[in-house]
Image (cartoon, rainbow, N blue to C red; front, top):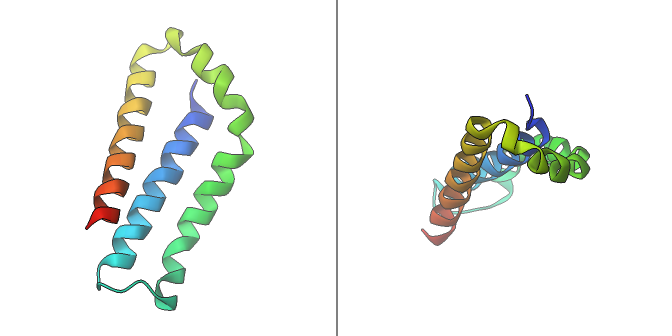
Length: 88
């Protein structure tokens, strides 16, 4: 995949949105919700580890327009989901 590291950032955003949704499901965010953050930590570590490659991936993304569209769609979807969850 040409945009592998960029996809890792999307995965981290998606994991964060899912964790916030799960934590807020019972109406209270507390210590019982800490386990929901494990996937966020794993995905975040992957995203941070390859962050220095993202600029190059995006500069070369014109060669992969459909993959870029998929990544951007995933990014926006994850961000919208996160914001909606935080505003609930």
